[in-house]
Image 1: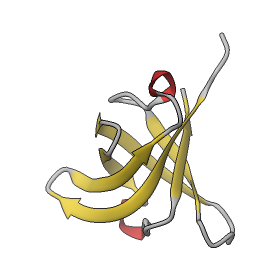
Image 2 (image 1 turned 90 degrees about the horizontal axis):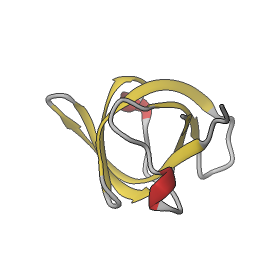
Image 3 (image 1 turned 90 degrees about the vertical axis):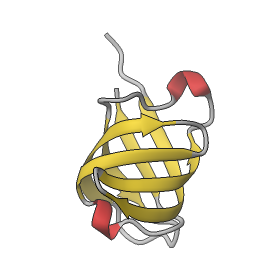
Length: 86
C-alpha cells in the first residue's frame, strides 16, 4: 500500500476548546486533503527555518479551515505548512 502526503497552509491560528482552529488552505487537490483522524506530523516554517515535529490529529477539515488537537498546535504560526502522511 502506498502512502500519500497531506498538507495544510496556515494563515491564522485560534485556540478552541478541542485544540486549535486553523484558517488557511488545504493541500493542492481535495483528493489529498487530510481527513478526520489523519495526523499532521511536521511543520515547515515559511521563513525557511528548520522543520519541527508535531502530533496533531485532524478533527475537522475543509478547504479553508481545519480543527486539530494534540501536541505542537500552540507553536503554530501564520505561514507554517503542516504536513502528514496517510
